[in-house]
Image (cartoon, rainbow, N blue to C red; front, side, top):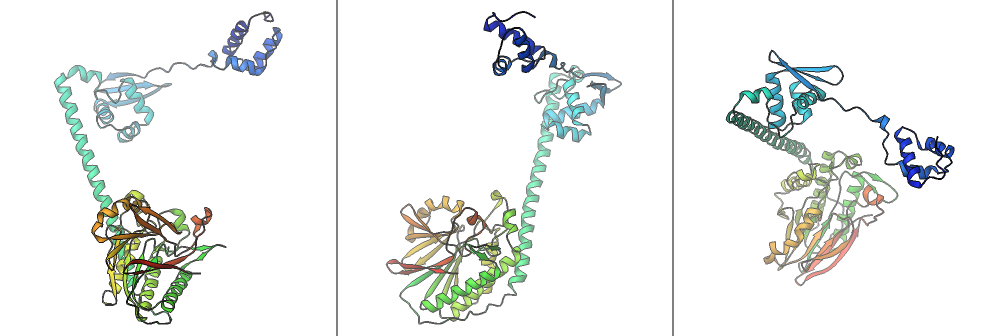
Length: 459
């Protein structure tokens, strides 16, 4: 061993790298340096050898698969004594699927009945890539350029037509499945809604007031939600009790007038996520119970001398489709609630239904109007355009829900009021420490516009 004590740093570094290439570790190199009179730390040695590759650890270069052609059969040899055989027609079909139809290695292997390693060996033996012509060297030698071009064109056209047919039938199947799903829900709900027999809540009646109009905002009922916590308790029984409180408060504190009830979405807790289903009752029972509660509220108010208008928009929670991109306003449990109420009260002269337009409702008071929407992502994007859509209707404000708490902001000079929820704190709001009162807003309007409002607490 040579003495390195008086050598330069560069020479000591070269010696360290040489030992590393021989396969020695930093600790072993350190011992060798100490024997040679150099006292380097392990950190210095690691900094010196970190980019050095151990030559005795390098693997051998993998041999490219080879093939031979005998009696119309190709035999490909690969790996350690492995081989795979295929006819000329099989090889051509596999290359056509890979290059022309643009299938993956796994898809071609499955189609041909080979393992992935076998097809990889075949394509590598013939040096085939995605941009290659789907022919063996022997076929290329036999065909003219015109024949090769024509065959490729025909194959591409055939695979393109097949892909078009597959996509078309997938689209048809998707639409049929969506129709069957919606049709199933409508049949189930129709049977339950027909069984509803609205009953009148016990209330105190007052005299009629014709000089004003009132708007009752009910939003985010979340029928079917189950929660039992120090901050909120909610289930079907609690929901029914709160509707009773709401009816009693209205009838005992304000005189009968034309009362517009705006239900601003998420009337059903829904099935859009697994954690939501986990904390929710059966969705059919959820739709039935909220429809029954609204029916009882209508009958109670009519019996107390109120004339009613009712409108409803849909929320994101009550969507039938779980995937956001597949959701539509039509395929929504909230729409079934509205449909059931409209059928149930179609012969009542004391109630008028205001149909929503693109999941937004226009409510007219005197010579002005207000707009109702749910307030989730899609509605917010449309708020800026509402002034243009209803420019001739003198819109003075927008009412929304979704946020579960009170918030007021402005779009294009129009105030947007987000309202408290009916259900109270749910699992999401509790986990985020977002507290909110549960209640309904009662807004009073006269000929000059908004006069006053109050929050009807439901606890």
